[in-house]
Length: 144
Image (cartoon, rainbow, N blue to C red):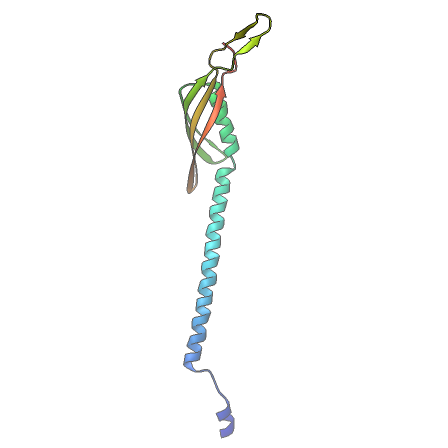
């Protein structure tokens, strides 16, 4: 029996502590990676929710600039859960190019119809907000 007990060998306390340290380090790395991927996924989801109505919002701004052109146009609204606010400042107000009239043999000039706007747009949804600056052309539909 004495020989049997001498051959049985267990793990020392140092070996158990090293194995536990490696295990906990691996668990920490895996849990932090998982948490970071969840946060990235949540941010991506918020960004998608924010950007989904963007084409509809810019179209609404374009329509507003065409319907009521002036030196400064401001507005706000909400679409698909996204709140937006915009400010459009007129940069230029120009007429169309003169047209040659074959009957009279002269160039026909028009009053200013086209406006170039500098638009500042801010979108907000849930926890995030984004801002853009872009230019938009608007025109009055009727010839004066």
